Length: 201
Length: 201
DNA sequence: CACGATCATAGACAGAGTGTCCAGAAACGG
DNA sequence: CCGTTTCTGGACACTCTGTCTATGATCGTG
Image (cartoon, rainbow over all chains, first blue to last red; front, side):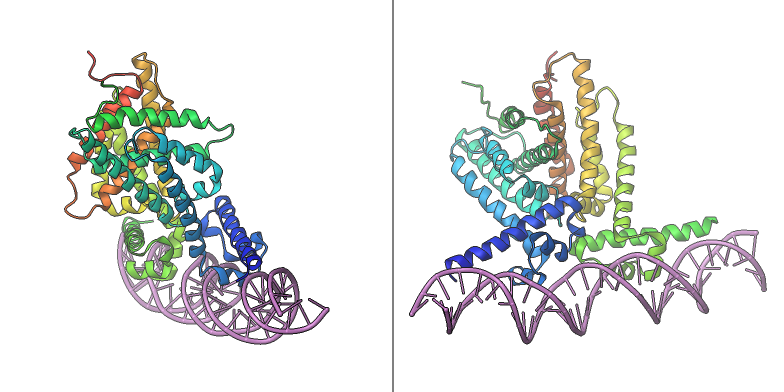
């Protein structure tokens, strides 16, 4: 495959990706047909099936793209020591969501089936659980709640707020302010829940 | 419509309801056809369309049944003064979910599209926001975070934990213990966030 | 510029599922 | 037993799907 041909292929896939996302946001996943997608992307219907097996396959492609991108950026931000506690990761996710809000809205709404949503939830809460555990160990404190439950709750909280924020009518509340709120909640509620007081000297 | 005929009709609708829920949990909403549903409910295909316009209509029927039931029970539990803060409503929702876990799992997974899930979220967070506001006013304190965000976060947290708990493998963690955790999180994190300390005298 | 490789395309195809209709069977109350 | 209501199987046209084939478009290379 030559460079230009690869570029052509990429452009087609990108067009299909974008068409799916915007159509799904417009009418909902079930109401979007392959016909609609190829019409919006301005490609032939046969072409669709040379790139993706399914409407589902295209959906999965979008989700995994976003998730992969997010993971890379989170890995860069998460200093192993302070991971998950300072609210930095939250800010990073908000920043990422701002760059491709449509894809985020599609996924967080649980559009399609909930696969994208659950992939997000699982990946994120696993990370949260790890960092919670590490922090509790590092400070030799005794968590006052089940850390598994804590991680789920923490992630659920952030995702709910993120979706609410993305769906908010313009002018959308400032990112910093919303993130600040989440960080505050995390600091007090979570630190306390793990038995570690951030304000103690 | 006579009494018995009404009873016959109810039985049919109930069978369809149950069939939808169990099939959706088994294979996912999109993979369930009207054929499958009527086969599982042991009724004719034509009968389906005399009761519901659509597969979607049946889904909506299930969701609104559950939601209506829940609202009634919450209204009974929520003493206007302490509403949303003691963790009592959380316990009530868990109790309700225990009585019809399949329907809850279907809805909270965002199966179908996310309509059921969002209906839950909206109703619940609206209530939360109201009670938060009332409480803050009653104690003449100044909330340290946006109450809208707080409500979203609170509900997201509870729904995430509820789904996690419903989907947990047997033996499922005791309800009381999980609820206790949520209550603890709510008491400290939320009370603090609204500027009202429950432990102050 | 012409060749070969690769991608895009239109149109046709069978199959599955949908939603509607009807005439008749079944269940029920009076 | 009669009248009413619900349930039923079968037939219908329709939409969408996923596959296939033959043809056209695009590009790098020799």
